[in-house]
Image 1: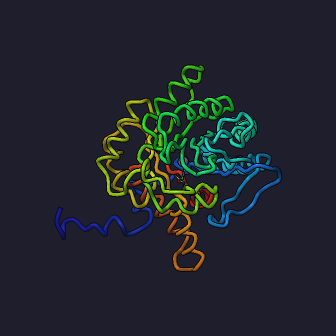
Image 2: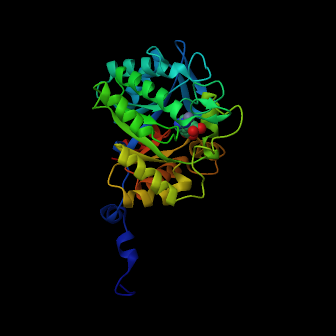
Image 3: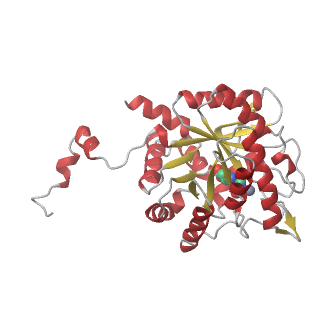
Length: 326
Ligand code: PBG
Ligand code: ZN
């Protein structure tokens, strides 16, 4: 195709032409909305590091989930901040934990809204690491036992999808075996397969007070320089029975999303994390960027890279904008 026989601008002339040949589109069906659940009642408090996002108590969180549901968002993902933290994070598998209670409340209110539970221990341990520590290091296999307990308690609370996020080796098998043994074959697993040790989680760690007291997460989360390793991590999780594989963060790892979506025949999720959200919000607040255009363009880029679904704090915002466009 050569100029002047081919003129690319011919098909860019009007919005209708552009709409006709557009390759990638955003839809409300693509979004998963994160919600932070805290102890107490009547709490709906803005999170300072994530403007526009809130801490919700159990009695309030179902209202926000219902708002997302009314906007057409298919799923929420829950994060819990427990009453008490301890060395192993035991409140994670308490039947009366905040996530378990929130799941029951949301399912009662919106039975067909998909409820996902991020399944990790860093919000629940007093040291802030993603499992049990042994001589200052994360004890993988001891942490898997607690993971198995936690997914069961989530399944009993009506969670549809568990999302292990601790980057423990064997975490998908541990979840699958535990769920199947107790008859929860229908509970799906969304694996945080390629989760990088990233500075982009900063605002989230403020929001849930989960920054490690000592050291960092580089001993279990992935090194940002590695791509081939992401393919290995994903293929392990696929072999262990993952139903959805996730890449996280999104924006700095679009190449990984593209590579995995080319290689793996499963739904691919991308997590547009707290730092990505916070950067857009901060620049928009200063008036340096056009928020609506930046949000939609960024989400579209993540979809174009190959993500089938996007976990994003902008889910309700983007859903509202999409609804206005039609
Ligand atoms: C828990 C977890 C984290 C995020 C999701 N699940 C934090 C971390 O690994 O430190 C980050 C989400 C975000 O930044 O939006 N392991
Ligand atoms: Zn964790």
